[in-house]
Length: 510
Image (spheres, rainbow, N blue to C red):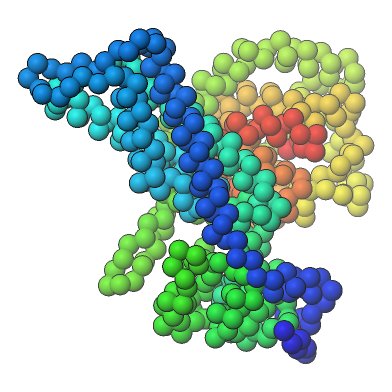
């Protein structure tokens, strides 16, 4: 591809050494998109089959033994009695068929989100619902215990094995394998934004190999996202051919002529190449998005976030119950930590700090004291040495104010355990945005104040997604994403991830 130099204030720069590598990679066709999808689906079919054989025949043997027991039929039916060994084989075949019919192995649901697990569960319940209806209509007596064991065991094992496959798939995608090769199409700014968003989550399986922009010239690079430009909007077919892309992602429809998206769609090979429309709105969860066709237009409706009194009540009850149980279970640990803080350094055991919480109200947050008593007075002296955190939150990798026992507690987030008292008292929740300091709130932009729509939490998306390594922009994005898309399942997932994040030596206290 010829190289052209752009002059003037333009974000698309002349090809550099780094962009040369990207362009060479983009120009190397790799027709492996369909292959990896088929291989992965085949692997899922094999393991699904093995799981079902193990579960169905295992529960049959556990409930009925090894004898040749037969399915009983009523006196008014002409159906012959069949062996449970044959019935189990039919059940496995129907179960496998249902998993295929519901598209539980398609690349559109694997790798991210819970749609894959939902489809597996739905297909399983549909199979057993069908069996129950047919057994009633045909007056067939199937051992209830055998069915009652097979359904939950089958669902649990199928989901577990699918989860294990997903971990393997994500690890491959982190290395650029088993991913859709994406050609971005749209304006310069929208391409850069979508490319950055996709790069943040390689595990989702979208690898950007190039872009086509209205005024693009092959050989240049969109500097902000380090994406090679492969041509203009009229050069999409050639760009896909040279880059080996199997997916076209349209990042901004407004920059395309009205018929261009249709033309792009018509030019794609069915089953091998895919079209994705990537709207600029981000961090909106699936349940809030509804696509409704109106007069041939696929209108995307984004529901406003709702916080009903019932949901708040359930969240509050969960906070109180789990915090009370937790306080009882870890009371010996709290006593040991309190004694260690007391005997290893002078000062109070608990550190009380003013934080900003629900609806912008201030409260006193409790922590085990992990620093020297004059830590706040030393803060100004240390700001010039800040090597972590971001422009709003102060962090230091080796903060000299931290005591020896405090360093151990902060490493495993043990200093935050007294915040359970804040949860019981109602000023905090187990899961929520990080409770900010008043001086941090003074630097907030208007939209950041939306994080006060819910109570701050001991843990949250920010805490389990990188903590001090995150930029301020990413910190705000994660907190607002939690506020906008909160569900009880989200809280459960975050609490589960917190245990792993707390054991990571790279984490630091909030």
